[in-house]
Every structure is written in C-alpha cells, then in structure tokens.
Image 1 (cartoon, rainbow, N blue to C red):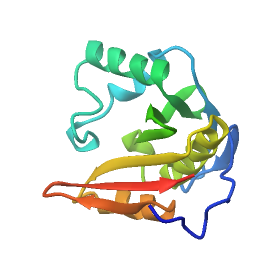
Image 2 (image 1 turned 90 degrees about the vertical axis):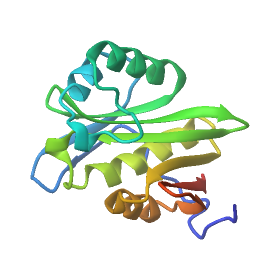
Image 3 (image 1 turned 90 degrees about the horizontal axis):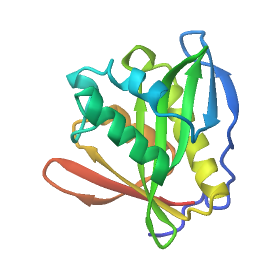
Length: 169
C-alpha cells in the first residue's frame, strides 16, 4: 500500500476524554481488564448492530469472543460514567499487521464516538508497535466506510458483499 500524506502523523493516545455529539462526557482508555463490562454492552446489541457474525448473539459466546479479543488484541474501551459504550481492538495477524474491529453501543452511535475511537485505537496500536491495519466492512455500511476513509483507510479489495480496507501507521 502506498504511503498516505498522513503518514508520520501521530494519532492521539489513550486516555482521551471528550464530549460527544449528544453532550455526554465519555472517556477512552487502553483496556486489558475483565470481559464483563464488554459482555454487558454487547448483550444489548440488536440484529442491526451486528455484522459479519460479530458480536455473537448469545451471552456465553459473547463472553468467549470478548475474552479472546482482550487476550490477543490491543484494546480501547469507551466509558460513559461506569458503563462500557464502545470497544475497538487491533488483533495482530503477524509481521506488524493487525485487523481492526470496532463497536459502539446502539444508543451511542452517530455521536462522533466511533470516529474518535478509531483514531485513539490507531494511536494505541502505534504505541504497541503495530505498523499496518486492515479491516473488512459490508459494502452497505456507508457510514462506517466514510469513517474509515476519514481515518486514512483505502480500499484494497472489493468483493460482492464486503470491502477490505487498509492503512499503514
């Protein structure tokens, strides 16, 4: 992948605090704690909030999946008061590369949290030595695609149902 004009740009690192578009103060922190706050967030997700089979639907599967992300990945969690309302992870796939996964609780979407969360996660990834990030997104998820492009991701592969995007850090 070609270097973008933004290369060398240092993304913000956690912790970060800001007021979202709904006037809620949220904080983003690097996280390697217990999976239970994430499980509590993910059990609230409806079918429209799930894509490509994640998060899983049933609580035991959610717990196992979230624990795996916490054990393997570089994680940032968004908190509103004492409630997890967003989670993003970079899961290493070798050679300094990682796959990005991001989720924002349905009640907190469209408030600017996802955009900020990606940037803070990328900063945390840089700090942890990740050099290249990729993701897969449904071609129908136009909002997410715009957010990813705004964070410097470029399309590397377009298939029938999904798009793969990538960027160097």
